[in-house]
Figure 1 (cartoon, helix red, strand yellow):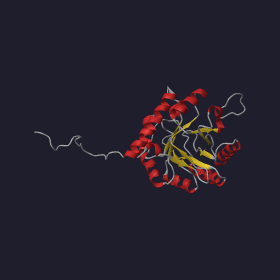
Figure 2: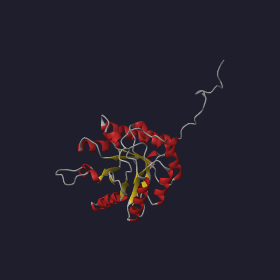
Figure 3: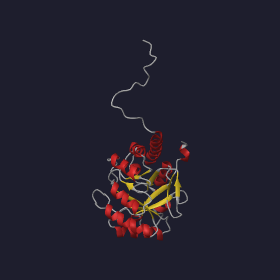
Figure 4: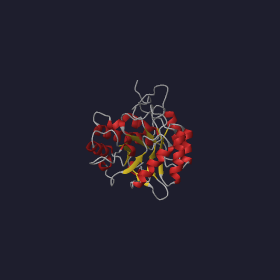
Length: 263
């Protein structure tokens, strides 16, 4: 397969976008706007997320939005920090008023300690946002039933967590992620918990469409170098998935054939 033609798409109702990159990067937690710009560039991302509730528009000087080249990246405003469906819908409407794309990352938190999503509230918010014309990408638990309900609600993709937000624990339930991939017909984007390049590669080897990450890059000792590593890991994991791994075997198999060995 020609890997250069291995693209993926999001959208509907005339708003489809096609992407080459399979890494989506969050813009929180970086030390400076310059570091944000450098890390985004090193990651090769074409879509970036912004938590609107964490931007203080009243402060003088450049904001986080000024650090993002809107001609280069698709902006994915997210509802981080929202604990009710009503609050999440309100933030998405704010994004629309600010002239952002109709794509939104829906996040409704159900528990302040673990930051696990409130799946029921997420489905409710998704239904309302889709009815209002938004293109919804929901953060949710790694639960197949919830993912199916989100697809039925009209979401463009599902974004199950790999592990708690910001934990860097990697994919805790690969079986659950694989079940979701095999049973929904929209892109599956692993969101939350990716801590290092090998985690990203595992997600892609499972067959995920893309990976979203923030802390794994921003909290590294060298965020820009980690962004580059994540980019390469996502690419390698995708190629491995397309190539198809060898069958696991219980016993050894000689790498060289036994036929023709001279005694």
